[in-house]
Image (cartoon, rainbow, N blue to C red; front, side, top):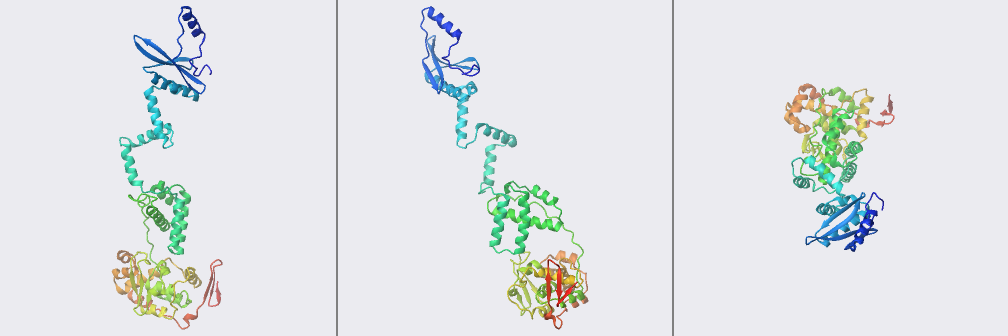
Length: 449
C-alpha cells in the first residue's frame, strides 16, 4: 500500500525496529498480536494489553500516514472493529473508519433499511431534507398519510397523450358523433402536444395560460375548455387523478362572450331560400326556421322524433344540448314542408349537407349569419306567443336570455308571414350540386357564378 493510505499494522518502520531491538536487548521477548483479522490482502492486528489488572484489546492500523489505535474491553468487539477496518481498507473507503462504533451501527442500520427500496443513503437524506424544508413544522408522516388518502386510488401515472388516446377510443366505441369526435381529437391532441407529461402534474394555471396564449376567439376558447374538462373528468373516473378533490381544470372559468346583435331573415328572404331548396336540404332549412332546433341536435334526430299526427317533434334528453327532454310544436307551414318528404332513417343523412345550405344562400347572393335560422325562429315565435317562458321551453334556452336578446325584434304581423311560408308549385323538382373544394354550385342544372 502507498504511504498516503492505510498500512498493515504488521509493516514496521525503522523506529519500530529500533524499539524492538531495544526491548530485546533488555532481555524481554516481543509480544505479538493476539489476533490478525484479514479481508483480502488487508490485515489488521489486535494487541492485548494489561494495566492495573484491567485487560484491553487494541486495534492498530494506519490512516494517511498516521498510526491509529482503538481500544476495546473484549476481544470480540475488537475483532468486529478490526474486520470493519480491514473491509474498508480493502474497498478503499478508509475514511469511514473515522466513525465511532455507534455511528457506524447507525450508518449500517440506515443502509439496511434503504436496501429494500434500492435507494442510496445520500439520496434518501437529500430527499428527506428537501421534504423537511417544504413541510416546515408539519409532520412528514401525517403529510404522507394525507397524500396516501388523496392519491392512493391512482392506479398508474398516465401521461396526457395516453389518456387522450384512451378517451377517444372509448368515445368512438360508445358511438359518439363524427363531429364531436373531431372536436375532441383536434383540441385534445393539441393539449397532449403541449403537455406530454403525466396528467397528474398538469395544473389549472398552466392550462389557462396556454389557452390565453392561443390566437382564438372567446367562443372557440370556451369550446376547447369544455373538451379539456371532459378529458380530466374521464381521467378521474379512470383513477388517473384523485377523486377526492376537483380536477386541475374545473376551476378555470369560461370567457364571458358578448352576444352580437341578433340577425334574422325576413319572411321574403326565407321564402326565396326555401323555394330554391332541393328536397335533401329542405328538412334542415324548414326545421331550423320553424322549430328552432339547434343544428347539433338535428344531427342526432331521426324521423321517428317527428310526429305529424300529434304535431310535435320530441328531442330526448340524450339528444338535447341541455340534457333535458323537450317537445316542440309543429306549425301548420312546417307540416306542409315535411309531409311530402321520405321519412326514413336520419333526418340529416350526411354531415356534408350542412355545407350545402350556406352554399345555396351564397348562390342566391344572401348572407348566412351564424345561427340565423334558430335566431329567426325564436324572434318570430316570441312575437306570436308573447311568452319568454314558453319559447324557452320550446327552444331549450333560458327565459332571461330570450327576453333580453329576442324580444321586440319583429312584430306579430311579420311573424304571421314567417309561419305562413309554404312550398311552391314544382318545389320538389329543385336540384343542387355543390363541389366544396372548388366552391362550385350548380342550381337546377345551371352553374351559379
